[in-house]
Image (cartoon, rainbow, N blue to C red):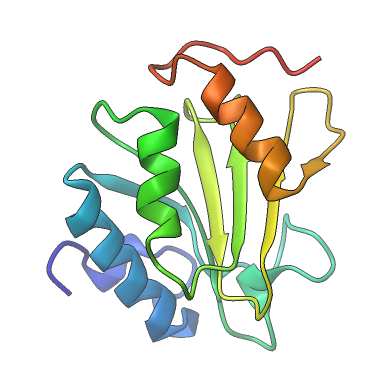
Length: 141
């Protein structure tokens, strides 16, 4: 890997799928800004069918971008990688935070502060385009 050390993938990096590690490294190269990893493999604190512990292997990553990319630029960098099928956007977390995973089919979502998830690429894109993308809050009501 060019940008990451295995130690940056917390909670037992040996349980993180090499594909998600390599993709995150390539994402960092494409974005041209730091990618701050928060969680890869984890067997607690996520949903029952979490991709952070899919059959004992971390196939997901929670992170945020450093630097000054708009939300649209961030999404475009993520979407560049066809193996990233699960994409979650958390505008209230780390301004914003993202979830990516290796599931077999596309699933897009956004987690508003209210906790009621919004699903679908079109809904996510509308919210991203409606924002200034430079760290300002998105109205999620």
